[in-house]
Length: 199
Length: 199
View 1 (tube, rainbow over the protein chains, first blue to last red):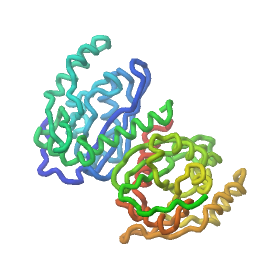
View 2 (cartoon, chains in turn brown, orange):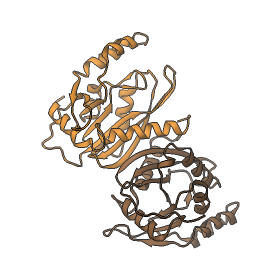
View 3 (cartoon, each protein chain N blue to C red):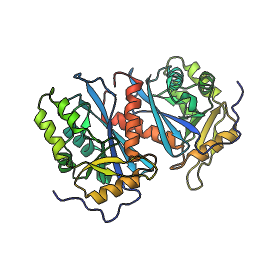
View 4 (tube, each protein chain N blue to C red):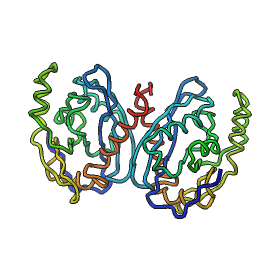
């Protein structure tokens, strides 16, 4: 599929930030995944939610379905994920996600992903090749300076040029060095997880 | 208890907005209540959650307990509620809440509460006198113009002067005619309710 080109990145571009909640590793339980719609880096417009299995294989499908069913879907221009591993090693295949939702995907992490460590961890899991493929197909890890005063972050991208992705991250990282939609998705997902065990 | 006086309302005053989710009326089920911490009208700082019973009597206690247990409690300066009725007719006694949390409480509604209608609805519920007392003790309904370009809103207050409460509402209503913390609490509570029936 062709890259999505942005003639200009509007200040109020609708961004979906997606992050998961806290969970007990190596269990068969499900984990909340929260999507937060922001207008650029300033205004929260909507919230959505799905669940994925710890160390499962359903993250790509569940996140795609959450987005496509949302009333905000038609407004969205880009999706920003908290990395490509959800709920342990439930990998998001960002190229597959891009195909399913027809929106550019940017996976952002504050630390550079340690591929050696991840490969080692995958050895104990079923379908490790499929998981590793998701990591390899996510493409190169690109360092981005989103704010002058803070640490750089790292991104992997699908459906968008490096230049456009960098601009999107810079424009929407208003409060910290990651897009506001992603910062807030993290706060909501972890706030809900703390409040009550059963969620 | 004495009113909380504000020497000045700081632009980044920590406000907690509290709203409930969607629910099926007249059931014995529980409803999510979401609390959202904002710095003034701009930045989301935290999220908390509790549950109250539809048409129950536990809203005051549950909201007080949610706030006091939160890691944000010491930062908070004021609590803004979406009116005083939660989950149907589960009344928040705002004076009692003020006493328990030692923070000013402002109950805000977009429409003027229709006390005749509410009194009639209470006739079919147990403990209607206690519910009605919570309404009467919330004191007079004060009209406030939070933004020049939009409709006025209505407030009832506990633990704060009318002048300070008006200033707080004006300073924190950045995106709409209600405080941003309350607007976002509504979006989160209804977004979660829509996403999955079991929450």
